[in-house]
Length: 209
Image 1 (cartoon, rainbow, N blue to C red):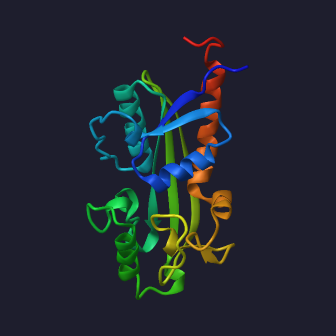
Image 2 (cartoon, rainbow, N blue to C red):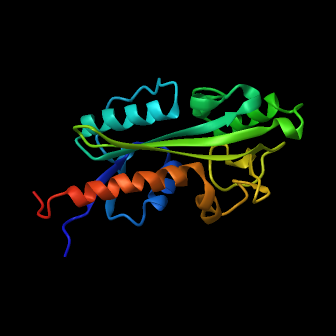
């Protein structure tokens, strides 16, 4: 028999992101919790210039504040024609309320006159794992696609309804979670981060303290 499940704090208050991350990590023997499940801590100011910097800062500061093994993810949409925007401002592109629909509509409005060959975009994800003492690892993932001309589909979250994945010929909002997870930026980053988590599990003493 193995010992009690190891606790892994997922540093988010976004319910949809939490469920997606838990699904992607479901083959690992963790007891998952989110920032909503623990006593309040100071909000981490995500002021990095890259997704990687934000993920690392969020993981390290949250792990230190809570004493828990922590996984943090930062991701967003990078549009060539918008000079890389929304980028690290993806969640609050249309305002501080972090409204997914408003964010999507703003991108569509800014790109409404652009032809199909100027609508290239990527989703990028960075996942960082930290324990209370140090950063344990960082992983990144990317998926390339194009911006649709209107929102399509109600699956997923964020910019999924306007991001067309070429091989599927549909937006991430139109496909199942299973199909999205086969190719998504977040799935790629989490898969790589999973190797760090497995290493940490293997390094734990066999007895519980």
